[in-house]
Image 1: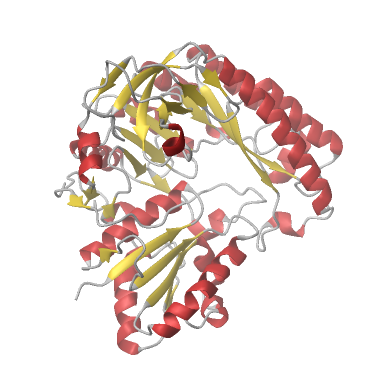
Image 2: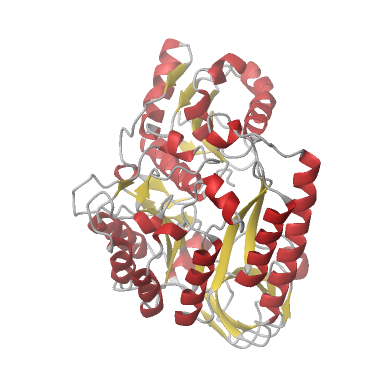
Length: 492
């Protein structure tokens, strides 16, 4: 009898994509996605260790599953990802009903570990210190019929004092450009319209094979892929951001006018303590160059508030940079002390109430900036790739949602003479922005254009792409037929 699975993902885009690979592995091993609302035979937690509450979130979820496990001993629970890499056997000690623990370097071992745990009737814990199999060699069951993640590298060579990722993901390893492009082409063959190139630091791509222009060349090569309409990437590091990348963004039509580049702090003193090898002036100069070449680019960022030793003057420097940078949006975080990072041992850890108060002020300033930037979009006609699940109030408001080319979220009215039958996620529409809020845009007039796509057909039919793996050094890439979806796994 086919066993069912469910994957619960926490954390960054890397984890989301790793979960697609876990789903591909499990389906190749004979498992099927659990039906919505049904109890799964195997529940996999793909964890994050970046935030302070990551441990509480995992063990809280594991606690909620214990009664199900007690009632059904054949059910299996697996824990992988960054927290598993960090905590290792401690997970089984704290939650002895867990069957499998695996790390970031051996996600390909999951089916074998599940079988071994079932056969031996005891927990299996396998954590490798270095990458066992490059993720590109593994199959992937994709979450979306219209947008896909493509890893160009794994790991990170930076030494930011607040970040635990390098110790959990390892040193940077780069895929060969031919492999990346083969995966992109395979996704497009399946009807995918948009890809996002993924790396802990995409700008350092090519360091492993000695080509400092590799990333800009890759962007330009993506522009040659017939049928690929949108290319995004995340995340670059300011220290490696070079003019050739800006030129490639501006000169490659399908590269979207969007840039997500982490700032972390606007204080040069704090940046130095973070071991971020750029200063605020350099950061703003990069933004000026991007906007000179792409005047309509939407720029987003990450900012940490309350880093150890941050003074009120340091925080004011951050607010000054936020006002000058004119970010369309920002992911803002309160500093959380992570054991094993240099910053955790620094003196002058700030009181929670100070961090909270600064955090609230930062959000207020950024919301003002975001709203002002979004108001500039009112009256403009934008192209929207229709998405599923982006608008929480869509059903109530009779709207649909999607992303403009610059990444902004747009809620729109899916009606008008231009509509060809019905608008589906994966279709492309054009609409005029009628209203702006700090975190989204609204287009309530009739659609100007509607293009039905194969991605929309697949979404309507409940089909998601499944891509096979690519071995390092091999130029070919197999494309199996897309499979019907039984149900989506849990995601971020």
